[in-house]
Length: 143
Image 1 (cartoon, rainbow, N blue to C red):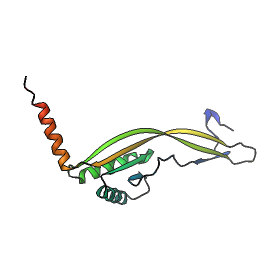
Image 2 (image 1 turned 135 degrees about the vertical axis):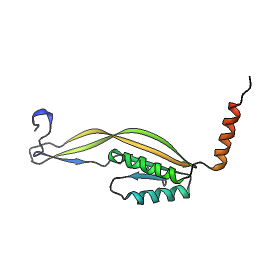
Image 3 (image 1 turned 45 degrees about the vertical axis):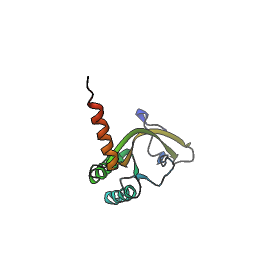
Image 4 (image 1 turned 180 degrees about the vertical axis):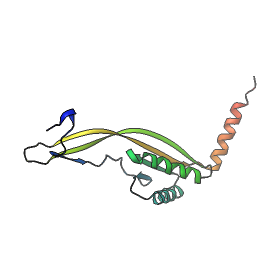
């Protein structure tokens, strides 16, 4: 069943990875993958950002870097009006081990994978000006 070193014998089992759990899908959620063309993902996010005020970009595992690059591209194109709020997490993934023979017994294993959730939101010019006024007033305190 197991070879030396605690590894599973590849001839006895087939590894089948289950789909990762997803949060309830909202209209402004974008799940980034390595398979989809980057420009297509970018244009979809840009359209969502233009039609609303925010987009949430989710990246899992290998797609974390792509999700970050996508958010940074949107921020660059936003000309100073687009802000980012980043949250990282670990997602527990489940894999099924399917026996190749009738004698074997099916099992499941779990593993953790890194994930990133980036809120890309548009800050209006009025809000930005108001924040600058508030910071400049709070810093000019006389003693």
